[in-house]
Length: 320
Image (cartoon, rainbow, N blue to C red; front, top):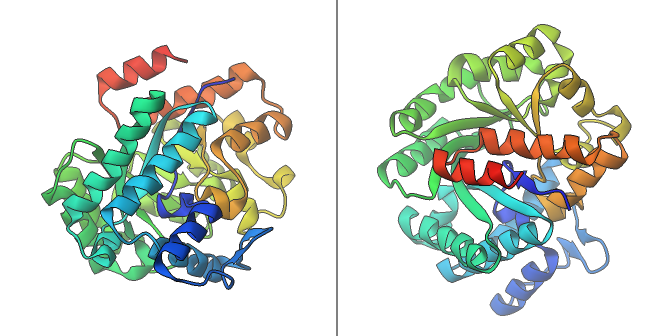
């Protein structure tokens, strides 16, 4: 099995339907509006996807719930051959739990550690602000990360609907995170075109781009990504499920790779999109025609771009 690594996955979005149903039974909540026993999560578009996502997230209500959620994801990831994974976590969920940012992060870190003790998998946390919740929310997320530094928190990013607001308005949040020593990434070039990626590079000065696939529409931008060694966190099944592209054969992953971009494979919100990191690697092999050596190259891309210390990175690369 080819070893794998993941850079782009949202913690609450990893919750498998069976785990969510168990949580719903625990808290006396009905699930039929959001989960079909045979088909999994129920949603039709980006808006209803967020509703299903938020419903699942609402059923993880204590730090102990978050330990279990995180451990479950990392055990699944390791079972699929992964040696490393980064997870997106939002301080807004800490507020929903009624606990501090520190307690929320410590619960996630404990889940990662428990999975590591069983499988050896390494993990790190990227604190994210949710773009469509507004500039203040994103800035507060950056401040929370900067003021409560944790060894497992190594990055900051922005998630959510990139169609909301102007990129430059979020620059202060990224300055706060950068000044605190955190590495930077942001969602861009998914629903918005290549200009979203260009503006993120100009104003946020990120080291990686979450998604970034629509960069292919601007060849000058593609060249810039190559020249500046910007890594793209590509999520193929997410792009298909959310109708960024109609089918896998239309996806620009291979065009971006052949143009020299540093591409990686990621699952985003795996059960919502009927995927997994293992499945993303299988797609790259079966649909895009990459052999195991090339797949291992994508793993190395991910580890080289990982927000992790040099010694851990060296150990991980030795496994590739």
